[in-house]
Image (tube, rainbow, N blue to C red; front, side):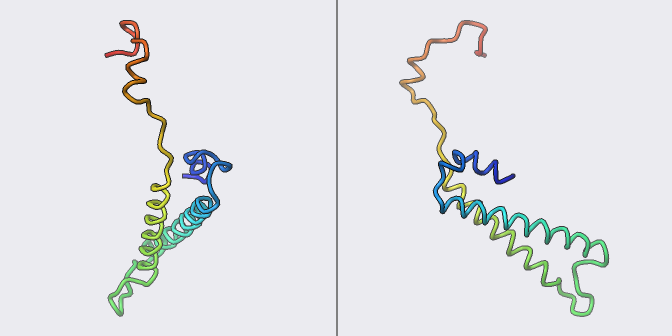
Length: 107
């Protein structure tokens, strides 16, 4: 997902408060950091693995990557709490609409 998509999902850059814009910027930065860490981890895994053979423990970058991923999850959850509700017609509005002719848009 791009920053443009985030902005569109929340009404455009003019419609969002500064705090929400800061959250979106943080999400994009965290996403870039996570992608970079993933690339490095894939290279590390391909060239010998993610575990130190002497200590038999995973390299610290593995735990760091998990922390960044958890941070991104929390940021996305915070963004979801700010999502704009969609305009959905209520029952009275739906009943007031003329019925579609047979064969159009119906089952």
